[in-house]
Image 1: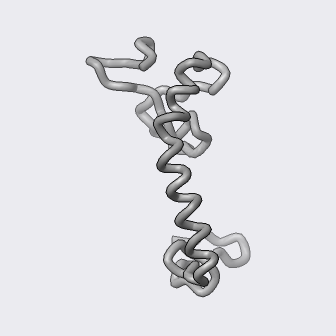
Image 2: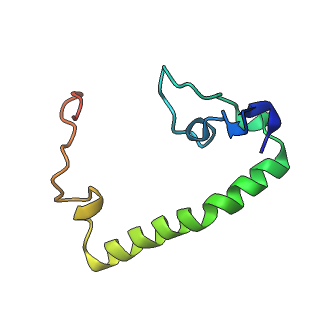
Image 3: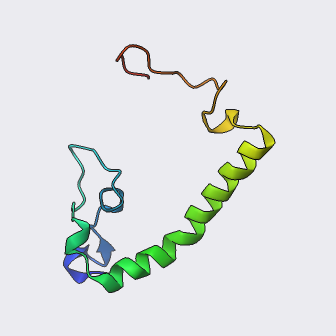
Length: 89
């Protein structure tokens, strides 16, 4: 863990931002660019999240091959679709 981004032993780093997914304007965590993160920390982070990422990718591939895309918002799902620039809620 990067000591610079710790408070009372807990991380203050926004992992969603680091992975490119945080777009909260009121995020309480530190938004740090990947270029500011040491290479060793990046390698460790990749090793930690790799099994989860592989499981999600494999699950999606299995659902696609079984024709069962509905559960993840695939074609024919009940998820609301965007229409004409409006927001889906």
